[in-house]
Amino acid sequence: MAYSNTPVKIPTVPGKITYRKRTDKVYVLYEIGRVYNPARKTTTAQRKMIGMQIRNAPTLMLPNENYDQFFENGVEKMTAKERKTAQDYEAIRGEYKILNSLFDQLYYEFQIQAHRSPHRVVNTFKIRRINKILEPLKKLMADEPYAGYLELPEEPETIPGKEGEEDKLEGLDFSGVALVLTQFKGAMTRFSADCL
Image (tube, rainbow, N blue to C red):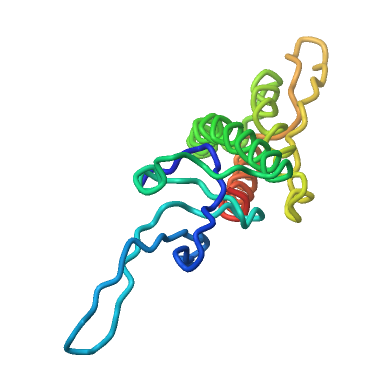
């Protein structure tokens, strides 16, 4: 089921909203009716999922198409604090989505290179390109406890060769960079589950 990227306030409908937790997500359900079972003499509530609750913002959710169906008159007004939380969340989610896509390309490329040439030093250009993606990712995850364990790869140093020999690069090799990227991938998986 597709969810909107724009948070809305969870509707205030007394007795009609319930929550269901599955793995690491909390879903918001809306009661659309009740069915009486004469054999059992019980009434069962019929509910439809209308969104996914935003972690760390219990009054907000990402709505799905059912929300539009049952609440076609629009969204409930948010408080100033909720509006700010929603805007921050939307901005973080959007930035993370772009960075995650770029990171995935980078990650798989370096996994391949680490198998082909594990001990070859990664040049300065590539390290700069990597850090252009890792720096904003680390900034996004700065408040998380695991962020302190993430390190950006350093640029290699050029060691002048003796007369008649070529200059050499000293720094992280492909297997070292692949390890750094694997640590970031683990942190990103956790961040996505905990904060998005």
